[in-house]
Length: 200
Image 1 (cartoon, rainbow, N blue to C red):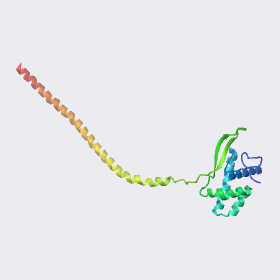
Image 2: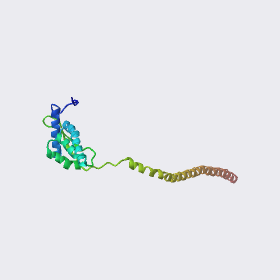
Image 3: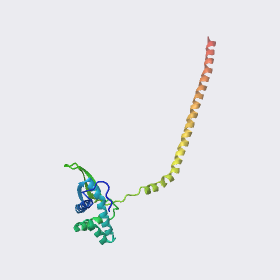
Image 4: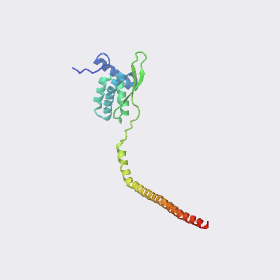
């Protein structure tokens, strides 16, 4: 006995759900995009992508007759199967997965059911560049430049230290010079007073 599907089922029974998915997949491959409810689109997505994978295997040379017969068990329209194998599968030859895209479009006017558009991805596949490789290549360059960068910084800090010492020495010498000036002025002041006293 087959294991029943968990959660709500599309249609009344398992056979009805298989027919619904078969018809939705046929329409998707025939038109490239269809509008349906979100629940049906989410259920259709893995179903349709498995059929596209079988067509890709046939395109790659893995027993094409067997793959075509497996798809014909599900999709009864031979014209749509031919379109799937001849036109759709070659466009996805380089793409490792994610052949369909679901876009939510809001709720239906009559029963407020959430609607979505499911469509075949038509953009050319561009593999993502690995992020670890550029970081690994860039890491040794700064490490080699770091000692060179530290040398000017060390010279700059030494120069700053000598400037600080010179300014501190100048500040220390300035009060000493002022003190000497005040002492000389103090010595001259009593001498001037004694000279004034003698004149008087």
